[in-house]
Length: 441
Image (cartoon, rainbow, N blue to C red; front, side, top):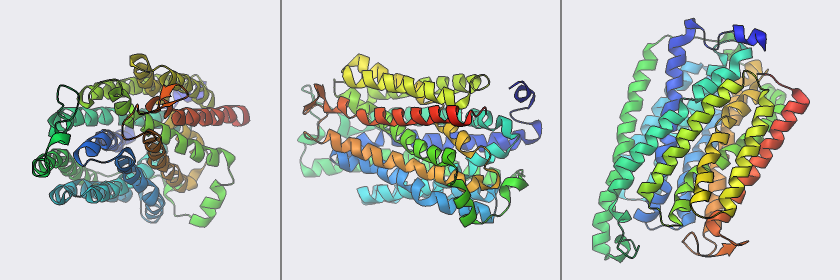
């Protein structure tokens, strides 16, 4: 541990490339968290049930699963830099497709645009994470990745603010009558069509602007000389690489833990709005709690990165998983504001999970890291499947969030049993890593 403190986390020679690639973490964080509130927005504008609305997350995170392995194959054949450029191109294309999607007013078109957008994010995450790990000594790799990942919630925070100030606050379909009924639900079909067109344009515009910004990043990175790590950018046999990876229980356990982590994160951040709405907090106000969750997440990321200098990564993962599980139990068992505050606090404990699991799983994988990264990104499919299961729980008694009680609590509270199970599984992985491998990253 003393030797580790003498090794720079980021060397001066790679500082500019590190900054550019780190900026991508903020860029996909923005996409993630401008999209989370869209589940509720699309539900109201297009009059969907909870399951249908959850298809937003299925399309968004399903794109990661589809494209992660092709991204690794592409990087293996070409380079990290070209993988980043292709990812930015697909990201921009998906964002710009929101324009025709709004023109056609078809939910399926929006889902397709999100699906393509996340093809780009899959390329970026499959490439950028191992690229950051390769920009220096392996001893400081997990610290370096946690540092880069600390900028992800900054982009996510900006995405939530844009969602609140420029989308949710402007949606006419969210306006309420004094009795709490939406004005939109009382309108005739012609009046609804006018509101629907206006609201879909409100949803469209930030994504189109985002596509233009992404194109700007693509141009800048294409003009900068980026470092190459010959050890990790050598061409390797995909079959041999996958075989070696899946012989490692630490790696396979990491893929499983990552799937459950992403599922838990997306459930906590997506259904925070429904949880708040269940006791009278409107979407535009609920976004403030989403912002608070991201601020807490960011604080946790910086605290966790500092603690990794002194605490074994597996042990820290275990402690944070226990904290998250306890906060989730309060969310389930205590309806109302206390439960909502507990739900926000879960973000502190989730903060280090993704990069720590990622770093543990890829530690020592060498040239196999690019394919290992692909499977860890494919694990993001947990964010596609688990929110859909939570949506099905919410639909048990109807389209509302407190239609029935399960074990004495409203179904929206009970639905958080799914994140609780996820955190238990993550804690088991952290314990096993510490006891069996005692990894000090």
